[in-house]
Image 1 (cartoon, rainbow, N blue to C red):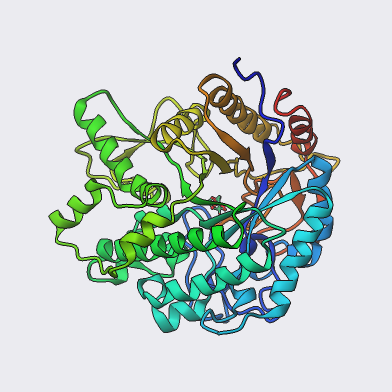
Image 2 (cartoon, helix red, strand yellow):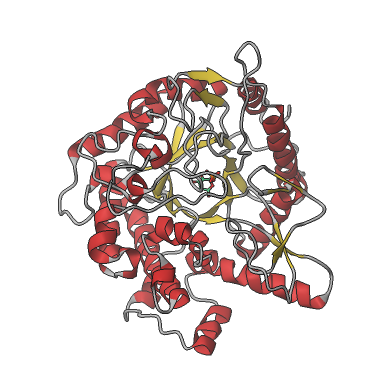
Length: 478
Ligand code: BG6
């Protein structure tokens, strides 16, 4: 019999990351993370990575939306919307402030115990990313970030502590958020946030990126293996930014160009899901004369640590054309990228393409035959309250319902195995790429603005009641 609706245990929820919501950047013994030294920017104005906290800069992640102090109020609102799960990350610097200590910081561990207890009290399953763009700054300064193999051990130590501590509270984990962003090695923010490395500072930037990638694959595989020993019920996923790359035309050169562009990104999920390097990457290294340092046991480690599912973000698709000189825009950063005339773009140039989500679900499922989890999707916009102070965000409802419609087709018509759906920034938070408050995604508005004004008060947008009804009807009423 064919499936008529989403499974009853489908994980509806919402997603954020610690550094984008928590604030409390220097509280509870927390150390400085790379995001604490990242200034605010805006569309077209890059965030600056400063050398320590410097006067004259604003650092939006220091305060973020004060989830550190207000999480109970926020979790109650998530529960009111009917969330079955909530995705966030653990700030490494709350647990190991510098990253290279031998013993964890109890106050940091207690914070996440309290948060997870609060979620579970409301029947909300925590979905936890171990590394979401916020490694200790000390590891970047003193060790050079993930280019240094020692960081693998530091990360495994941190992760082992939290996997053990929360083994009875958290079942769903992910290792590295959008690990494939750093493939765009010529855009400094991506390498910096994924791994604490600005690749363009290195003589062979692409080789450096692959070296980092290998270290993170080893760390991820070790954790999957270790996690399953700690609790065999753990579901540990990888996490990629899924931006399907379309050929601009049916010219065979465009089609091949698009396929090669996808290979450059698939390597990140291929290794984490299959446990070995694909030939197209090994051949590329040989062709380019790249040497990637590996240890004798790495091959076995990768094979024994394949992830259980693929978590992915989906915001947009991209089109590429062979034989173009352009580098695409700086955020999407895809070589040969050209505007797709068949789709519209957001104010930040992100091309809106709901059908691309169904397409992505299908190609990922066909490629790996493993469960998928859409752990980010959403519409960043400037919300303007009406005369009564209420935000009627129909544009967000339109975006999300069009995507859920396509997600439904993928599950109900195409038979894709999908675990859940957690739209990004379920509560307004600091933007990753621009550091803005005013680029908003939430169902819950936070009164905080780019100019620093605002009370941090929470209020429900129109999309709040809409999403509540989507969850209550298990995706029937959009
Ligand atoms: C993803 C990240 O890239 O997209 C999130 O995992 C990020 O951290 C989200 O916030 C949306 O991007 P932005 O720049 O609009 O906040």
